[in-house]
Image (cartoon, rainbow, N blue to C red):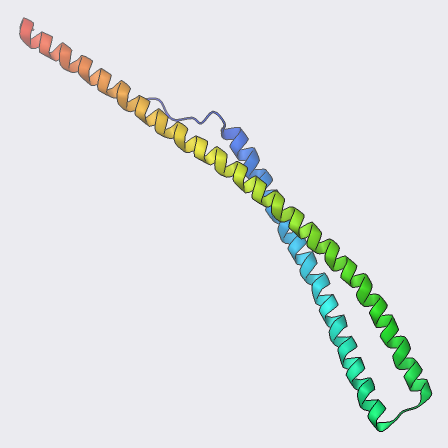
Length: 150
Protein backbone atom coordinates (compact mmCIF):
# COMPACT_ATOMS: atom_id res chain seq x y z
CA UNK A 1 0.00 0.00 0.00
CA UNK A 2 1.32 3.42 -0.94
CA UNK A 3 1.57 6.06 1.74
CA UNK A 4 -0.18 9.32 1.00
CA UNK A 5 2.08 12.21 -0.01
CA UNK A 6 0.49 15.58 -0.84
CA UNK A 7 2.28 17.05 -3.83
CA UNK A 8 1.86 20.66 -2.63
CA UNK A 9 2.94 20.00 0.97
CA UNK A 10 5.88 22.43 0.76
CA UNK A 11 3.69 25.14 -0.76
CA UNK A 12 1.11 24.61 2.00
CA UNK A 13 3.83 24.81 4.66
CA UNK A 14 5.17 28.01 3.09
CA UNK A 15 1.68 29.57 3.00
CA UNK A 16 1.10 28.60 6.62
CA UNK A 17 4.41 30.22 7.56
CA UNK A 18 3.41 33.40 5.70
CA UNK A 19 0.07 33.38 7.52
CA UNK A 20 1.80 32.98 10.88
CA UNK A 21 4.17 35.87 10.13
CA UNK A 22 1.25 38.04 9.05
CA UNK A 23 -0.60 37.15 12.28
CA UNK A 24 2.41 38.32 14.30
CA UNK A 25 2.60 41.57 12.31
CA UNK A 26 -1.15 42.10 12.71
CA UNK A 27 -0.95 41.58 16.48
CA UNK A 28 1.92 44.05 16.61
CA UNK A 29 -0.12 46.59 14.62
CA UNK A 30 -3.09 46.10 16.98
CA UNK A 31 -0.80 46.61 19.97
CA UNK A 32 0.66 49.79 18.42
CA UNK A 33 -2.86 51.08 17.74
CA UNK A 34 -3.94 50.39 21.31
CA UNK A 35 -0.92 52.25 22.69
CA UNK A 36 -1.52 55.33 20.52
CA UNK A 37 -5.28 55.27 21.11
CA UNK A 38 -4.74 55.05 24.86
CA UNK A 39 -2.39 58.02 24.67
CA UNK A 40 -5.02 60.01 22.76
CA UNK A 41 -7.68 59.05 25.30
CA UNK A 42 -5.43 60.16 28.16
CA UNK A 43 -4.74 63.49 26.45
CA UNK A 44 -8.45 64.10 25.85
CA UNK A 45 -9.21 63.30 29.49
CA UNK A 46 -6.43 65.67 30.57
CA UNK A 47 -7.86 68.43 28.38
CA UNK A 48 -11.35 67.82 29.77
CA UNK A 49 -10.04 67.89 33.34
CA UNK A 50 -8.09 71.11 32.64
CA UNK A 51 -11.13 72.82 31.10
CA UNK A 52 -13.27 71.79 34.09
CA UNK A 53 -10.60 73.09 36.45
CA UNK A 54 -10.41 76.37 34.50
CA UNK A 55 -14.22 76.75 34.66
CA UNK A 56 -14.14 76.15 38.38
CA UNK A 57 -11.47 78.80 38.88
CA UNK A 58 -13.38 81.23 36.65
CA UNK A 59 -16.32 81.11 39.03
CA UNK A 60 -14.10 81.77 42.06
CA UNK A 61 -11.81 84.18 40.22
CA UNK A 62 -8.11 83.97 39.40
CA UNK A 63 -5.34 86.14 38.01
CA UNK A 64 -4.67 87.10 34.38
CA UNK A 65 -1.40 85.20 34.59
CA UNK A 66 -3.25 82.00 35.42
CA UNK A 67 -5.68 82.62 32.54
CA UNK A 68 -2.72 82.90 30.16
CA UNK A 69 -1.12 79.76 31.61
CA UNK A 70 -4.33 77.76 31.16
CA UNK A 71 -4.76 79.12 27.67
CA UNK A 72 -1.20 78.18 26.64
CA UNK A 73 -1.49 74.77 28.27
CA UNK A 74 -4.81 74.01 26.54
CA UNK A 75 -3.37 75.23 23.22
CA UNK A 76 -0.39 72.95 23.70
CA UNK A 77 -2.69 70.04 24.58
CA UNK A 78 -4.81 70.66 21.47
CA UNK A 79 -1.69 70.67 19.28
CA UNK A 80 -0.49 67.41 20.86
CA UNK A 81 -3.98 65.90 20.50
CA UNK A 82 -4.01 66.77 16.79
CA UNK A 83 -0.62 65.09 16.32
CA UNK A 84 -1.69 61.99 18.23
CA UNK A 85 -4.95 61.83 16.24
CA UNK A 86 -2.82 61.62 13.09
CA UNK A 87 -0.80 58.82 14.67
CA UNK A 88 -4.03 57.02 15.60
CA UNK A 89 -5.27 57.27 12.01
CA UNK A 90 -1.96 55.92 10.71
CA UNK A 91 -1.95 53.09 13.25
CA UNK A 92 -5.56 52.23 12.38
CA UNK A 93 -4.71 52.23 8.69
CA UNK A 94 -1.71 49.95 9.30
CA UNK A 95 -3.81 47.65 11.46
CA UNK A 96 -6.54 47.45 8.79
CA UNK A 97 -3.96 46.72 6.10
CA UNK A 98 -2.49 43.83 8.10
CA UNK A 99 -5.99 42.57 8.87
CA UNK A 100 -6.76 42.41 5.13
CA UNK A 101 -3.42 40.68 4.46
CA UNK A 102 -4.15 38.16 7.21
CA UNK A 103 -7.56 37.46 5.69
CA UNK A 104 -5.94 36.89 2.28
CA UNK A 105 -3.33 34.54 3.75
CA UNK A 106 -5.98 32.64 5.70
CA UNK A 107 -8.04 32.15 2.54
CA UNK A 108 -4.97 30.92 0.64
CA UNK A 109 -4.14 28.39 3.36
CA UNK A 110 -7.74 27.19 3.47
CA UNK A 111 -7.71 26.70 -0.32
CA UNK A 112 -4.59 24.54 -0.10
CA UNK A 113 -6.02 22.61 2.84
CA UNK A 114 -9.22 21.97 0.87
CA UNK A 115 -7.16 20.82 -2.12
CA UNK A 116 -5.20 18.50 0.19
CA UNK A 117 -8.40 17.10 1.62
CA UNK A 118 -9.82 16.42 -1.86
CA UNK A 119 -6.51 14.92 -3.00
CA UNK A 120 -6.41 12.66 0.06
CA UNK A 121 -9.97 11.51 -0.61
CA UNK A 122 -9.08 10.83 -4.25
CA UNK A 123 -6.04 8.85 -3.08
CA UNK A 124 -8.22 6.83 -0.68
CA UNK A 125 -10.76 6.03 -3.41
CA UNK A 126 -7.95 5.00 -5.76
CA UNK A 127 -6.45 2.69 -3.11
CA UNK A 128 -9.87 1.19 -2.38
CA UNK A 129 -10.37 0.53 -6.08
CA UNK A 130 -6.90 -1.05 -6.42
CA UNK A 131 -7.57 -3.20 -3.37
CA UNK A 132 -10.90 -4.38 -4.74
CA UNK A 133 -9.23 -5.25 -8.07
CA UNK A 134 -6.56 -7.27 -6.23
CA UNK A 135 -9.21 -9.06 -4.16
CA UNK A 136 -11.13 -9.89 -7.36
CA UNK A 137 -7.98 -11.28 -8.91
CA UNK A 138 -7.24 -13.36 -5.80
CA UNK A 139 -10.75 -14.73 -5.63
CA UNK A 140 -10.63 -15.56 -9.36
CA UNK A 141 -7.32 -17.39 -8.85
CA UNK A 142 -8.72 -19.29 -5.88
CA UNK A 143 -11.80 -20.22 -7.86
CA UNK A 144 -9.67 -21.50 -10.78
CA UNK A 145 -7.47 -23.50 -8.38
CA UNK A 146 -10.51 -25.17 -6.85
CA UNK A 147 -12.04 -25.76 -10.27
CA UNK A 148 -8.82 -27.25 -11.69
CA UNK A 149 -8.26 -29.27 -8.53
CA UNK A 150 -4.97 -27.76 -7.41
